[in-house]
Image 1: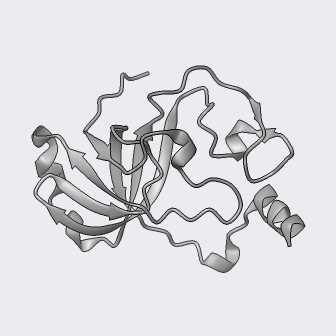
Image 2: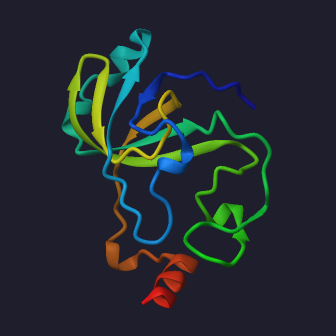
Length: 148
């Protein structure tokens, strides 16, 4: 086990979870800034070469968890590990964002779905060798089909 330590914090337009787009067809297009703590600035070296980043962050305002949850995109319960629900045994979030530009310790991004002030635990360049035609969307594809 380890104790997490924030490397920075999110600056986001979302002050309340109810403001974040959720459910089928939700688009995450909001601009935000990943403000990295000065002591971690050297870790940003060469990050500008990547178009997209994966941000690992903490659901710092959620307590407790449920193993079966009903997401806003479906009216059926699913296992928490088959969803993006914040009600998780370990309150860890994961978001892919587009890197717009870097200004020192600030990464200006598009696609935030985190609350303002959310602790950032890690950042990784988005790399995938899985062709889109091989990706499956599980129960979400079924829920989308029922909506048509």
